[in-house]
Length: 561
Image (cartoon, rainbow, N blue to C red; front, side):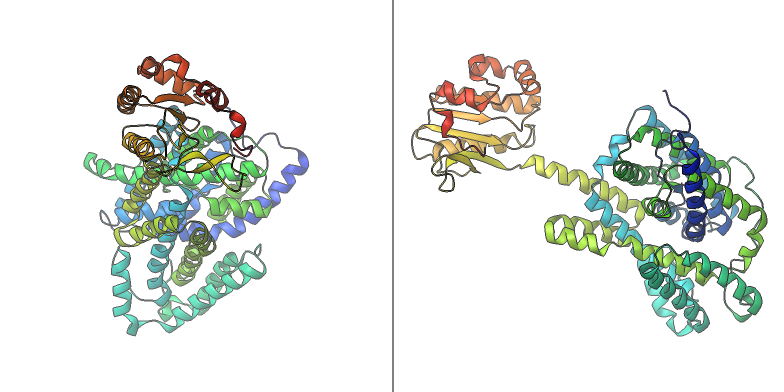
């Protein structure tokens, strides 16, 4: 396994370094409140959110390749493992933190395996549509989870529906001061996000909340605060768990792994393409594996390449990982000199910040665009979102992967089929039209196109289509040309079915020709004996050659085909 260090940092000139230095400081001002919020989502002490943006960030800068990807705490992965860990230990306890470290270590192991076997392509199996629905579901779940702290009441459940029920039952006990602060923070962030998007309003809310809490003794007036926070840099230590606990956590790590692969590779690819830079997904996976291994042994939790934080870094002007290194240095300064002030931070301020992050995960604009362009895909997105809310994040992401794969299989299972036929629009010349029984290309000829590879699940559609076209053709068909331009693969089962079909048609007086046969399909046809059944003289590289062999004029085909 060969790799190069600091690919995301170098080369770096003087002016670029200054630009990224300023961008890193700006990013820190915007992102520190968010990582504190993600720690809240994860059920971890607030300071561990800062830990995720310290040494893990440096580990990715060292081993990763993307110049733009920001790797730190993330709401999606935090929600995934928190929903399971909350059933195994009390949130924030030493045991809980140890289990969170084990999840990070297992995730690092899975990512390392993915790097060794170059599995970066796995990101392609989670469609953008389903990922959008998954993130919307996470947004709803996280937003509901924050309502308890924003209202000053106990949510009383780890499940979204249970939290809604608990909050509804305790509405009479809402703390008005807590609610007022929450509304002010949420309103301020949303308003200024629209008016002045680069202004670090969340940071101002944190600083203002800490100052007001210290001066007016919020804790003494019934407004919950974070409480004492351990200062200083993270102390290294190996997370410990029993063998059974480790096995129980493996599916959780696998869910985090899938989300990291999907989000990180997609985000890295988007920003690399924007700046015309090469993409090395496998190197990025190695970098995130290193970041999670470091997180596991420094008291942090699972880290992810966040599309949201990467976009924030891009808006701040970051063009290399040097900006993220500066971000980590700023976090180190906060840990050394300012962490003691975090004890005065009101829970409602942190919850309000996280609530605005959750709202941002629900991309209504893109969901509406999907509805307009592909209503069927919107259904997939909404089903995924509903699954996350009702059955949980861990099962929701597994369903998201399954739906993505089923959607792909569905298109291959029953693809579009076309045929050449004379049309009025082309003045009677042959043009592609949907394959329909009762239509022919010319007297005695049908040119048919199957829009996918042939395999065991769809070969019967191919056979049924061919037989229906032949049986209901206006004239007796003597030449049946298969336009194989979309067929690149033929498995054993489909090959047997195709051989039987061709034998039967041959005995019935129908000459079957294959046109646009590429080298991959030709190799499969040779190996499975299809070439022997048809004869080599019935396989052609172009449609033009096949039509000539059948005795028809190729110029009858519309030039648009």
